[in-house]
Length: 243
Image 1: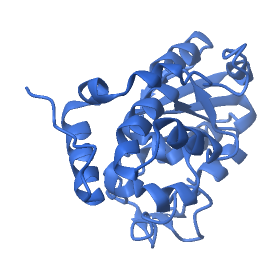
Image 2: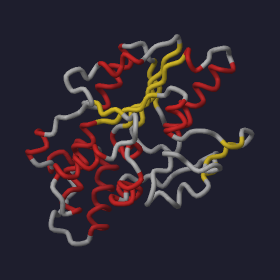
Image 3: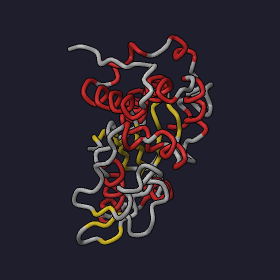
Image 4: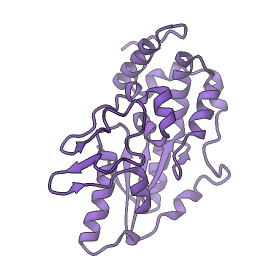
């Protein structure tokens, strides 16, 4: 299998983004890794507290613990399953305080960690193929608005409805209010910021800096998604694939 070619001099940004998205989706991060400039290794500020990246996980408490692995947009599942976990625990006698839920945004799911202005500027819906929203749920204007906003950050009332349930609170801010912890993979951010930099006529360092400045409140940067999955499980969380 050959590595997809990316032309840094490509004047057509949409063509560049299309190649990146197709290549990444088909072959994964490892395939586009060879195109990352050497300076990517210098980007290591992965945590609010880089001296103790494990400290964030000390918030994991309670009797019932789960970590959801979000590798792709997977429609709305990275946000539905945490809510279902909390609701069904509540229905069986365990309150939100009895539960700890961690969502790891990695690989192609990392745009969900960013604020609206970055979605509009970088067109994440095109790059990461995040248009498949809905399924059994009805996404009001969320799907059509994805080029200008993160559909899961402060969603509008009525954006997400489920048959038999009506409006469902699956926005990141709504889940955070219920105690759900979100983190995002620094390794994936490093790869994609480098790969997108040429098409945006920016330096990789500037893209990465802008992405980290545009993180949603409360979202923790971790060295890598797989590292975070391991740490969460070491703290007693059971692994659940968010797809």
